[in-house]
Image (cartoon, rainbow, N blue to C red):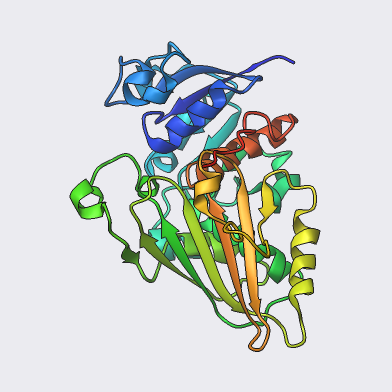
Length: 344
């Protein structure tokens, strides 16, 4: 099979760098160019030391981009939308890792992000969660990567709402989030003396990823997200508090997940009756494209606690985007994504 050329805009950041890491090991992708304004002229390993010896590429200015088969945009939110015409002329297949085109509803976008620079393009991109939108991704030339917190929340709740397992009551989601989710740019909140050893609630209400969750869940349920910053470098642990329909049991929950995720290569149900690894733990999906999903039902109250662990930079960002790209190109969707993780 002929290899496809791919260039990554904003490859010095965490999202772009992670996509680059995955693309370099992909048998059908040839990385043509990677851009960075700050590090133009520097070798890739100057910023991403894990890629030392894996590539001789150097960063170039975005203005030096040449046409390619695929263009990955890992830019700050809003930049791609404002410069869409220039970038879209460079490749027939676009993969955006920002929030610019994740939403279809302009009112939702306005509520969480403000006015959109290109509202005429909302709805033109396919949302890159393969477990929800695989068929649409097969024909998608424009792909919008999902938010990491939204990915974890959607994967945990979608099967339950699709199967009608849950009562139509508010769902409360808590997300324990790692430092890399904030991106590569430093801030006072990410300064090591402030972040190390800290567990800090930083977005108790109004988290922007709520928009993606609501738009993609069946029936647009009432979902409330609270984000808590930890000092882990990678990983997200999502827990959702919800209630099952009267008379429904753990067997019904199992059935909902089995129906939704049978044959899914990167979803694992983690619910063991003994041992120390009975529920999902971000530690064991670090560096992988897996989503580990667990749950526990409180029989006497009907309260269901759903747990999802992902790596925010892989399954939460670059990994699901590459999985979606594999589907679009007609390649096996696991290509470049088969790392199983580490233990201990």
